[in-house]
Image 1 (cartoon, rainbow, N blue to C red):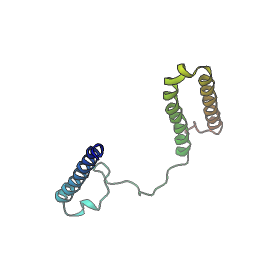
Image 2: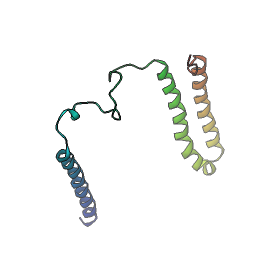
Image 3: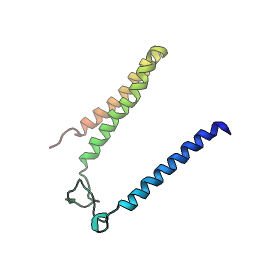
Image 4: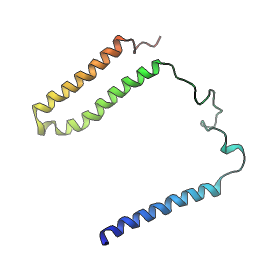
Length: 115
């Protein structure tokens, strides 16, 4: 049970810290309408919380996610490419080619035009 004693002590410390933060929040809370108003860096909201975005933002988001996924997979690949060899290079170029197909499709559909 000795190896688990430090883990249990850490969990107890974590629980005490979280409880302390919640207790401080409850004690320091101000009465009034401050709790029911929305917080937007001190400004009143200009639109409703459930307002919709224009559809062109979804295309921009998908393009961002495509490039974001590229970077997520490129970093670990760059660490092992020397060890694995030419097959890792071929696999990465196939992956980049697949992402390029998505970018060409978005370009053809006009996702990069903002007017």
